[in-house]
Amino acid sequence: MKENVLKVNEIYFSIQGEGTAAGLPCVFIRLTWCNLRCTYCDSEYSFYEGKNMTFDEILEEVKKYNCELVELTGGEPLVQSKSIDFMKTLCDLGYKVLIETGGSLPVKNIDPRVTVIMDLKCPSSGMAHKNRLENLQYLKKNDELKFVIGSLEDYEWCKKIIEKHNLTGKCEILFSTVFGKLAPVDLVNKILEDNLKVRFQLQMHKFIWAPDLRGV
Image (spheres, rainbow, N blue to C red):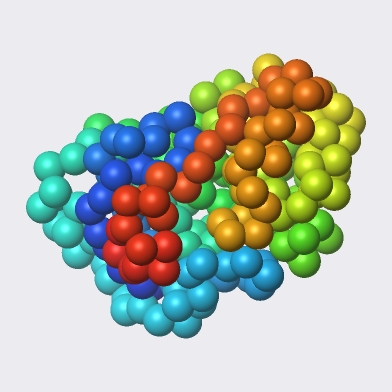
């Protein structure tokens, strides 16, 4: 049996900056490696940096913060197949578990108790061709589908995806802008103009701390 080990970039305690849990204290486990190279990536340091940790070692770090909300992020956490087992372990221990994934790797085997936050890649990311659209059928009501929008062309693309795959009401749909690229007011005005049934969000942590600060 393969040892229960993950390569971990960092573990830190902060507030959840996005999604329906925004503002809540959360323990973040950032795993190493990513199979995508988005043009606007803000965590390139996670592509290679990290150390091997056993499940028990990771859990010891998580326990220090006495927080029930835990998120696996990256990089792309699903690159490491053991992340699936680790999320189940967290759920079994009573944690409320989130995973942020780029949508290019299968999500169907993720424990149904986990909230999947799928960051579907828009054209300006340069990675839209990697989207695994069959993942959309596995999203649950309490999951979140996130679009990071860098241009009004991206916005129109998002509208088409939502309509084509009948996503309205399937799960929470989140719209945000690429930080520093598209003015939030421009995106909000388009959402209101089209009366689109989505939730607009800002990356809260980038307004509390410096946008490029690690570990927050």
